[in-house]
Image 1 (cartoon, helix red, strand yellow):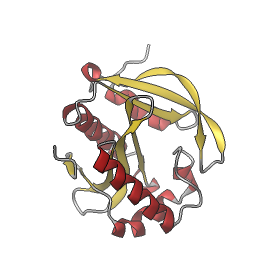
Image 2 (cartoon, one colour; image 1 turned 90 degrees about the vertical axis):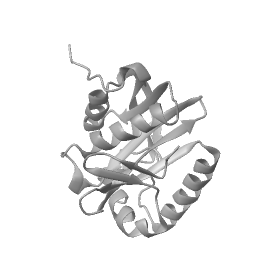
Image 3 (cartoon, helix red, strand yellow; image 1 turned 45 degrees about the horizontal axis):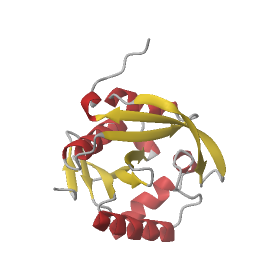
Length: 184
């Protein structure tokens, strides 16, 4: 299984590195990014990055965490992160985020599509789970483009907001991957 580097037409996904702190910390430190993530604190410091790296490396060694830094293929610029993570409920969940300068160009969809393909083909996952906060419909549109279907609402904590937030849960069975949902 090749899980250190993944490619898509415009993106290269690779393992996070210590040196990524200079790019990642300011991006995820933006409250508009952090507020849409359940586990990212705000403010976000370099020490938070190093703690994340430790957790990612431990999870990767156990086969429960596959986190990637999203870079632009043309110049290697760091744009954000994505990954697939084992959850205690017995499922893999995908997540992704991009720095604000990279919003609205289809990069989130491209990264989420590539990480989903990795989960289905390399990890042999049968169903992926994802969630997006109710006040972040752009993330919901990304998931819908990949064929994710609604699976109810639940409350999830947001470290950055320091509060519980309504979260729309979505499911994607392997056989529906890539099928775009059409609104009724």
